[in-house]
Image (cartoon, rainbow, N blue to C red):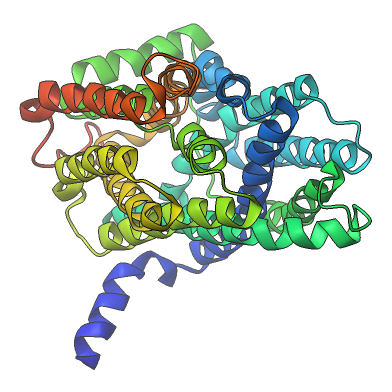
Length: 427
């Protein structure tokens, strides 16, 4: 038993044996805990400012992810031309400034819904460059054999931090009542403490990025920026394994992968939960996602769970729609997180192992486009369908979203890859 456990641990965390990747991974884990505290506090803040409006939550999500829809393809061309360290330092500094602005205005009671939308848009612009740059840098610090594991561990850190950050939100917000709101549990300034803690977390990751020895890349001669973008698009269109995986991710992002709208709305409006339960429900989703990332990290073949993850995701979303209250919602949301991460880690690893390094920034920015860029229309679709003010209501609306996602899975089922191809031009 001990030997099997040790073998599982060595296999599941194999990428962490590379010291530079290990430094980056732990710094990201710390920073993302702060980011998830901020994201959860921002969702709660929007519901407080709007009187529990799913439309307001949807529009803030649109503001946050619209830049990825508009800029992802351009961002990929930039990442393939500019040193990744420079891109990451610029994006992290921008996110530091926006977190500070949100903390100060909330603390002073000057925060408004339009201001939150503006800050979300600026943060989203930074993330449009940050996300594909971080995904592309995996190959800078681990060999090809460890890329699937590193991708899974990146998702693990993302979801460990989601679980910790969302669970800590309830505790930190309660602490903010005494530290910032003078004991008044209704004072909006209590929600500033998670934002302040996120500001502090950025300094660690900035230091690590500034001191990591990024390998030198040969950028070679370049044509026009538009030509670079077209080259990336041509590659994806001509590569069925990459194209069909991206179509699946995009279709599900447009329909059922909108838990940044679904979870807060169900928690606050459908279940009537306050801060602690709200944070715990979000953390339950994160625990499931963490388990999905760990499971995927222990699998040598990233394609294994592509279809299975989609099925688990859709079935668990239907079960959430049928769940009567928050107690039973905990395991159901954990299943949603498990299915979503099993799917997304498998999809990301498949794309990363198929594309040539010369096109990595552009193709991963297109992956970000279909995953994150579908957030704005997806958020509007989800917030409309699950609204208590619309014809379907929250429960039938969520079942409708799951049904739309299942149609996409069925249409692409036989076209999804079953084996990995070696990147063209990589020897």
